[in-house]
Length: 389
Image (cartoon, rainbow, N blue to C red):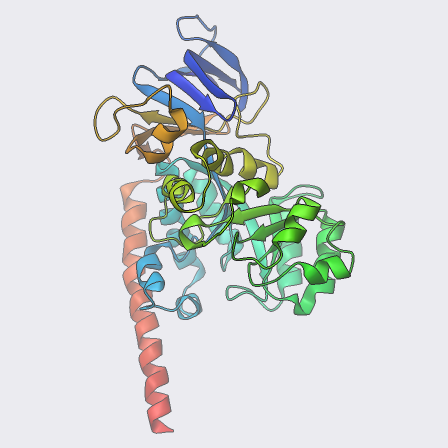
Protein backbone atom coordinates (compact mmCIF):
# COMPACT_ATOMS: atom_id res chain seq x y z
CA UNK A 1 0.00 0.00 0.00
CA UNK A 2 1.16 3.52 -0.85
CA UNK A 3 0.00 6.18 1.62
CA UNK A 4 0.90 9.52 3.14
CA UNK A 5 0.65 10.86 6.70
CA UNK A 6 0.39 14.65 7.02
CA UNK A 7 1.11 16.48 10.28
CA UNK A 8 1.88 19.89 11.75
CA UNK A 9 5.04 18.27 13.10
CA UNK A 10 6.98 15.07 12.56
CA UNK A 11 8.86 14.33 15.79
CA UNK A 12 11.76 11.89 16.03
CA UNK A 13 15.02 11.69 17.96
CA UNK A 14 16.54 13.92 15.28
CA UNK A 15 14.16 16.77 16.10
CA UNK A 16 11.04 18.29 14.53
CA UNK A 17 10.07 18.70 10.89
CA UNK A 18 7.18 21.15 10.50
CA UNK A 19 4.26 21.09 8.05
CA UNK A 20 5.30 17.91 6.30
CA UNK A 21 4.05 14.49 5.37
CA UNK A 22 5.53 11.04 5.34
CA UNK A 23 5.45 8.97 2.17
CA UNK A 24 5.07 5.22 2.77
CA UNK A 25 5.20 2.45 0.20
CA UNK A 26 5.19 -1.33 0.65
CA UNK A 27 5.74 -1.11 4.40
CA UNK A 28 8.76 1.20 4.23
CA UNK A 29 9.28 4.93 4.67
CA UNK A 30 10.13 6.47 1.31
CA UNK A 31 10.77 10.03 2.44
CA UNK A 32 9.42 13.28 3.84
CA UNK A 33 7.89 16.01 1.64
CA UNK A 34 6.24 19.36 2.29
CA UNK A 35 2.60 19.02 3.28
CA UNK A 36 1.31 20.85 0.18
CA UNK A 37 3.40 18.73 -2.21
CA UNK A 38 1.53 16.30 -4.44
CA UNK A 39 2.46 12.62 -4.21
CA UNK A 40 1.53 10.33 -7.08
CA UNK A 41 -0.40 7.07 -6.87
CA UNK A 42 -1.43 7.50 -3.24
CA UNK A 43 -4.06 5.01 -2.09
CA UNK A 44 -4.68 6.50 1.36
CA UNK A 45 -4.09 9.88 3.00
CA UNK A 46 -3.91 10.04 6.80
CA UNK A 47 -3.27 12.76 9.38
CA UNK A 48 -3.87 16.45 8.76
CA UNK A 49 -3.92 19.70 10.73
CA UNK A 50 -3.71 19.52 14.51
CA UNK A 51 -1.75 16.28 14.34
CA UNK A 52 1.74 15.22 15.33
CA UNK A 53 3.37 12.06 13.97
CA UNK A 54 6.13 10.10 15.72
CA UNK A 55 7.74 6.71 15.28
CA UNK A 56 5.56 4.23 17.14
CA UNK A 57 6.67 2.77 20.46
CA UNK A 58 8.40 -0.47 21.46
CA UNK A 59 7.95 -2.36 24.74
CA UNK A 60 10.82 -4.80 25.13
CA UNK A 61 9.25 -6.93 27.86
CA UNK A 62 5.56 -7.25 28.67
CA UNK A 63 3.19 -9.76 30.22
CA UNK A 64 0.14 -9.96 27.98
CA UNK A 65 -2.00 -12.78 29.35
CA UNK A 66 -2.07 -11.22 32.82
CA UNK A 67 -3.31 -7.89 31.45
CA UNK A 68 -6.94 -8.29 32.67
CA UNK A 69 -5.70 -9.07 36.19
CA UNK A 70 -2.94 -6.47 36.45
CA UNK A 71 -4.54 -4.42 39.22
CA UNK A 72 -5.21 -7.38 41.53
CA UNK A 73 -1.77 -8.89 40.79
CA UNK A 74 -0.20 -5.53 41.58
CA UNK A 75 -1.92 -5.23 44.97
CA UNK A 76 -1.33 -8.87 45.85
CA UNK A 77 -4.95 -10.05 45.71
CA UNK A 78 -4.16 -12.48 42.90
CA UNK A 79 -1.12 -14.64 42.26
CA UNK A 80 0.29 -14.82 38.74
CA UNK A 81 1.31 -18.47 39.07
CA UNK A 82 -2.20 -19.46 40.19
CA UNK A 83 -3.73 -17.60 37.25
CA UNK A 84 -1.37 -19.29 34.81
CA UNK A 85 -2.26 -22.71 36.26
CA UNK A 86 -5.97 -22.38 35.39
CA UNK A 87 -5.55 -20.53 32.09
CA UNK A 88 -6.23 -22.44 28.85
CA UNK A 89 -4.71 -21.73 25.44
CA UNK A 90 -7.95 -20.08 24.31
CA UNK A 91 -7.97 -17.93 27.45
CA UNK A 92 -4.40 -16.84 26.72
CA UNK A 93 -5.36 -15.90 23.16
CA UNK A 94 -8.23 -13.65 24.20
CA UNK A 95 -6.35 -12.06 27.10
CA UNK A 96 -3.41 -11.29 24.79
CA UNK A 97 -5.91 -9.86 22.31
CA UNK A 98 -7.20 -7.47 25.00
CA UNK A 99 -3.65 -6.46 25.94
CA UNK A 100 -2.65 -5.90 22.30
CA UNK A 101 -5.84 -3.87 21.74
CA UNK A 102 -4.77 -1.65 24.64
CA UNK A 103 -1.19 -1.36 23.39
CA UNK A 104 -2.32 -0.43 19.89
CA UNK A 105 -4.51 2.37 21.27
CA UNK A 106 -1.51 3.78 23.13
CA UNK A 107 0.87 3.77 20.17
CA UNK A 108 2.87 0.57 20.76
CA UNK A 109 3.63 -1.35 17.56
CA UNK A 110 6.23 -3.91 18.71
CA UNK A 111 6.07 -5.96 21.89
CA UNK A 112 8.33 -8.57 23.48
CA UNK A 113 6.29 -10.87 25.67
CA UNK A 114 6.95 -13.71 28.07
CA UNK A 115 3.75 -15.70 28.57
CA UNK A 116 2.48 -19.27 28.60
CA UNK A 117 1.13 -20.54 25.25
CA UNK A 118 3.52 -18.25 23.33
CA UNK A 119 2.46 -19.42 19.87
CA UNK A 120 -1.18 -18.64 20.65
CA UNK A 121 -0.26 -15.30 22.21
CA UNK A 122 1.83 -14.32 19.18
CA UNK A 123 -1.14 -15.02 16.91
CA UNK A 124 -3.30 -12.73 19.06
CA UNK A 125 -0.73 -9.93 18.80
CA UNK A 126 -0.62 -10.40 15.02
CA UNK A 127 -4.41 -10.41 14.83
CA UNK A 128 -4.48 -6.87 16.23
CA UNK A 129 -1.78 -5.89 13.71
CA UNK A 130 1.23 -5.51 16.00
CA UNK A 131 4.69 -7.10 15.80
CA UNK A 132 5.13 -10.00 18.26
CA UNK A 133 8.51 -10.98 19.73
CA UNK A 134 8.58 -14.13 21.83
CA UNK A 135 10.82 -14.52 24.89
CA UNK A 136 10.92 -18.21 25.86
CA UNK A 137 11.42 -18.37 29.60
CA UNK A 138 13.94 -20.61 31.36
CA UNK A 139 13.35 -20.98 35.09
CA UNK A 140 10.63 -18.30 35.04
CA UNK A 141 7.15 -18.60 36.62
CA UNK A 142 5.62 -18.77 33.13
CA UNK A 143 8.22 -21.28 31.81
CA UNK A 144 7.69 -24.83 30.66
CA UNK A 145 10.10 -27.55 31.78
CA UNK A 146 10.87 -28.51 28.17
CA UNK A 147 11.95 -24.98 27.26
CA UNK A 148 14.52 -26.14 24.72
CA UNK A 149 11.97 -28.02 22.61
CA UNK A 150 9.55 -25.10 22.91
CA UNK A 151 12.22 -22.67 21.75
CA UNK A 152 13.19 -24.81 18.75
CA UNK A 153 9.59 -25.19 17.60
CA UNK A 154 8.83 -21.48 17.99
CA UNK A 155 12.11 -20.44 16.38
CA UNK A 156 11.40 -22.51 13.27
CA UNK A 157 7.86 -21.13 13.08
CA UNK A 158 8.42 -17.46 13.85
CA UNK A 159 12.07 -16.59 13.31
CA UNK A 160 15.36 -17.43 11.56
CA UNK A 161 19.04 -17.52 12.48
CA UNK A 162 20.35 -14.05 13.22
CA UNK A 163 16.89 -12.55 13.80
CA UNK A 164 15.36 -11.78 17.18
CA UNK A 165 11.69 -12.64 16.69
CA UNK A 166 12.16 -15.51 19.17
CA UNK A 167 14.64 -15.18 22.02
CA UNK A 168 15.47 -16.77 25.36
CA UNK A 169 14.73 -15.26 28.77
CA UNK A 170 16.91 -16.44 31.66
CA UNK A 171 15.39 -16.25 35.16
CA UNK A 172 17.95 -18.51 36.88
CA UNK A 173 21.58 -19.35 36.19
CA UNK A 174 21.08 -23.07 36.93
CA UNK A 175 20.87 -23.90 33.20
CA UNK A 176 23.14 -21.11 32.03
CA UNK A 177 25.50 -23.28 29.96
CA UNK A 178 22.73 -24.93 27.96
CA UNK A 179 20.82 -21.67 27.49
CA UNK A 180 23.96 -19.97 26.24
CA UNK A 181 24.66 -22.79 23.79
CA UNK A 182 21.15 -22.57 22.32
CA UNK A 183 21.24 -18.77 22.07
CA UNK A 184 24.66 -18.84 20.39
CA UNK A 185 23.60 -21.48 17.88
CA UNK A 186 20.44 -19.51 16.97
CA UNK A 187 22.31 -16.18 17.02
CA UNK A 188 19.41 -14.73 18.95
CA UNK A 189 18.98 -12.39 21.90
CA UNK A 190 19.38 -13.56 25.49
CA UNK A 191 17.11 -11.64 27.86
CA UNK A 192 18.47 -11.75 31.41
CA UNK A 193 16.00 -11.16 34.22
CA UNK A 194 16.75 -8.54 36.87
CA UNK A 195 17.24 -11.33 39.41
CA UNK A 196 20.16 -12.85 37.46
CA UNK A 197 23.43 -10.87 37.66
CA UNK A 198 25.77 -10.90 34.68
CA UNK A 199 28.93 -11.78 36.63
CA UNK A 200 28.66 -15.51 35.88
CA UNK A 201 28.29 -14.82 32.15
CA UNK A 202 31.44 -12.69 32.29
CA UNK A 203 33.37 -15.32 34.24
CA UNK A 204 32.52 -18.00 31.66
CA UNK A 205 33.30 -15.71 28.73
CA UNK A 206 29.72 -15.77 27.47
CA UNK A 207 29.08 -12.07 27.77
CA UNK A 208 30.86 -11.23 24.51
CA UNK A 209 29.51 -14.14 22.49
CA UNK A 210 25.74 -13.61 22.53
CA UNK A 211 23.69 -10.39 22.34
CA UNK A 212 22.22 -9.65 25.77
CA UNK A 213 19.29 -7.57 26.98
CA UNK A 214 19.36 -7.02 30.75
CA UNK A 215 16.02 -6.29 32.40
CA UNK A 216 16.02 -3.75 35.22
CA UNK A 217 17.82 -0.47 35.73
CA UNK A 218 19.21 1.02 38.90
CA UNK A 219 18.16 -2.06 40.88
CA UNK A 220 20.68 -4.29 39.07
CA UNK A 221 23.92 -5.19 40.84
CA UNK A 222 25.96 -5.36 37.64
CA UNK A 223 25.66 -1.85 36.21
CA UNK A 224 29.43 -1.64 35.74
CA UNK A 225 29.36 -4.71 33.46
CA UNK A 226 26.46 -3.30 31.46
CA UNK A 227 28.44 -0.15 30.82
CA UNK A 228 31.74 -1.97 30.22
CA UNK A 229 30.33 -4.27 27.52
CA UNK A 230 27.70 -1.92 26.07
CA UNK A 231 24.89 -4.32 26.93
CA UNK A 232 21.33 -3.34 26.05
CA UNK A 233 19.21 -2.66 29.12
CA UNK A 234 15.45 -2.27 29.56
CA UNK A 235 13.78 -0.83 32.62
CA UNK A 236 10.25 -0.31 33.90
CA UNK A 237 10.24 3.23 35.32
CA UNK A 238 7.24 2.65 37.62
CA UNK A 239 9.12 -0.17 39.35
CA UNK A 240 12.58 1.43 39.46
CA UNK A 241 14.62 3.33 42.00
CA UNK A 242 17.86 4.88 40.79
CA UNK A 243 20.47 7.16 42.33
CA UNK A 244 22.13 7.91 39.00
CA UNK A 245 20.87 8.89 35.52
CA UNK A 246 20.05 5.74 33.55
CA UNK A 247 20.40 7.69 30.30
CA UNK A 248 24.11 6.80 30.21
CA UNK A 249 23.05 3.21 29.41
CA UNK A 250 20.66 4.14 26.55
CA UNK A 251 17.85 2.10 28.14
CA UNK A 252 14.77 0.80 26.41
CA UNK A 253 11.40 0.75 28.18
CA UNK A 254 9.58 -2.35 29.40
CA UNK A 255 5.90 -2.18 30.35
CA UNK A 256 6.13 -5.44 32.31
CA UNK A 257 2.76 -5.57 34.15
CA UNK A 258 2.45 -1.98 35.29
CA UNK A 259 -1.06 -1.01 36.42
CA UNK A 260 -1.20 1.93 34.00
CA UNK A 261 0.03 -0.19 31.07
CA UNK A 262 0.87 2.99 29.17
CA UNK A 263 4.30 3.60 27.70
CA UNK A 264 3.94 7.39 27.68
CA UNK A 265 3.18 7.24 31.39
CA UNK A 266 6.40 5.25 31.84
CA UNK A 267 8.23 7.97 29.92
CA UNK A 268 6.86 10.61 32.27
CA UNK A 269 7.92 8.59 35.34
CA UNK A 270 11.39 8.20 33.84
CA UNK A 271 11.64 11.99 33.56
CA UNK A 272 10.09 12.92 36.90
CA UNK A 273 11.75 10.24 39.07
CA UNK A 274 14.69 8.71 37.23
CA UNK A 275 16.56 11.73 35.90
CA UNK A 276 16.03 11.14 32.20
CA UNK A 277 15.41 14.18 30.03
CA UNK A 278 12.21 14.16 27.95
CA UNK A 279 14.08 13.52 24.71
CA UNK A 280 15.95 10.64 26.37
CA UNK A 281 12.69 9.09 27.56
CA UNK A 282 11.28 9.40 24.04
CA UNK A 283 14.41 7.75 22.65
CA UNK A 284 14.06 4.94 25.20
CA UNK A 285 10.60 4.09 23.88
CA UNK A 286 11.54 4.27 20.20
CA UNK A 287 15.13 3.99 18.92
CA UNK A 288 16.59 2.14 21.91
CA UNK A 289 13.93 -0.55 21.79
CA UNK A 290 14.38 -0.92 18.03
CA UNK A 291 18.13 -1.31 18.42
CA UNK A 292 17.73 -3.99 21.10
CA UNK A 293 15.55 -5.98 18.68
CA UNK A 294 17.71 -5.15 15.64
CA UNK A 295 14.76 -3.45 13.99
CA UNK A 296 15.23 -0.64 11.49
CA UNK A 297 12.63 1.56 13.15
CA UNK A 298 12.28 4.49 15.54
CA UNK A 299 13.24 7.10 12.94
CA UNK A 300 11.85 8.75 9.82
CA UNK A 301 14.85 7.82 7.70
CA UNK A 302 14.14 6.62 4.17
CA UNK A 303 14.01 2.83 4.09
CA UNK A 304 13.05 2.45 7.76
CA UNK A 305 10.09 0.34 8.83
CA UNK A 306 6.83 2.27 8.42
CA UNK A 307 5.66 2.06 12.05
CA UNK A 308 4.10 5.44 12.85
CA UNK A 309 1.85 6.88 15.56
CA UNK A 310 -0.31 9.96 14.93
CA UNK A 311 -1.58 12.04 17.86
CA UNK A 312 -4.30 14.68 17.85
CA UNK A 313 -3.63 17.99 19.66
CA UNK A 314 -6.51 20.25 18.61
CA UNK A 315 -8.29 20.67 21.97
CA UNK A 316 -7.85 20.00 25.70
CA UNK A 317 -6.75 17.79 27.31
CA UNK A 318 -4.47 17.19 24.32
CA UNK A 319 -3.87 20.86 23.62
CA UNK A 320 -1.32 22.40 23.25
CA UNK A 321 1.58 20.93 21.32
CA UNK A 322 4.49 23.33 21.78
CA UNK A 323 6.94 23.17 18.92
CA UNK A 324 9.62 24.61 21.19
CA UNK A 325 9.09 21.72 23.63
CA UNK A 326 8.10 18.75 21.45
CA UNK A 327 9.26 15.95 23.75
CA UNK A 328 7.71 17.51 26.84
CA UNK A 329 4.45 17.88 24.90
CA UNK A 330 4.44 14.22 23.89
CA UNK A 331 5.48 12.86 27.29
CA UNK A 332 3.26 14.95 29.56
CA UNK A 333 0.18 16.00 27.58
CA UNK A 334 -3.10 14.16 27.45
CA UNK A 335 -2.87 13.76 23.69
CA UNK A 336 -4.88 10.91 22.26
CA UNK A 337 -3.74 8.48 19.62
CA UNK A 338 -5.68 8.90 16.40
CA UNK A 339 -3.84 6.56 14.03
CA UNK A 340 -1.31 3.74 14.30
CA UNK A 341 0.41 2.41 11.20
CA UNK A 342 2.40 -0.84 11.44
CA UNK A 343 4.33 -2.30 8.49
CA UNK A 344 2.78 0.41 6.35
CA UNK A 345 -0.81 -0.62 7.15
CA UNK A 346 -3.32 1.23 9.37
CA UNK A 347 -3.98 -0.73 12.55
CA UNK A 348 -5.81 2.01 14.47
CA UNK A 349 -7.71 4.91 12.89
CA UNK A 350 -10.00 7.40 14.55
CA UNK A 351 -8.71 5.98 17.83
CA UNK A 352 -10.35 2.61 17.07
CA UNK A 353 -8.44 -0.66 16.39
CA UNK A 354 -9.42 -1.84 12.92
CA UNK A 355 -8.74 -5.59 13.20
CA UNK A 356 -10.61 -6.45 16.41
CA UNK A 357 -14.36 -6.19 16.88
CA UNK A 358 -16.59 -5.77 19.90
CA UNK A 359 -17.61 -9.46 19.76
CA UNK A 360 -14.00 -10.51 20.38
CA UNK A 361 -13.68 -8.05 23.25
CA UNK A 362 -16.89 -9.38 24.82
CA UNK A 363 -15.67 -12.97 24.47
CA UNK A 364 -12.43 -11.99 26.19
CA UNK A 365 -14.14 -10.24 29.09
CA UNK A 366 -16.37 -13.28 29.62
CA UNK A 367 -13.30 -15.50 29.85
CA UNK A 368 -11.78 -13.19 32.46
CA UNK A 369 -14.70 -13.95 34.77
CA UNK A 370 -14.35 -17.70 34.14
CA UNK A 371 -10.63 -17.73 34.95
CA UNK A 372 -11.33 -15.68 38.08
CA UNK A 373 -13.77 -18.36 39.22
CA UNK A 374 -11.40 -21.23 38.43
CA UNK A 375 -8.51 -19.55 40.23
CA UNK A 376 -10.68 -18.85 43.27
CA UNK A 377 -11.97 -22.43 43.35
CA UNK A 378 -8.43 -23.80 43.18
CA UNK A 379 -7.37 -21.64 46.12
CA UNK A 380 -10.42 -22.81 48.11
CA UNK A 381 -9.67 -26.48 47.29
CA UNK A 382 -6.08 -26.12 48.45
CA UNK A 383 -7.23 -24.49 51.68
CA UNK A 384 -9.78 -27.31 52.28
CA UNK A 385 -7.15 -30.01 51.70
CA UNK A 386 -4.84 -28.35 54.18
CA UNK A 387 -7.63 -28.23 56.77
CA UNK A 388 -8.33 -31.94 56.24
CA UNK A 389 -4.67 -32.76 56.81
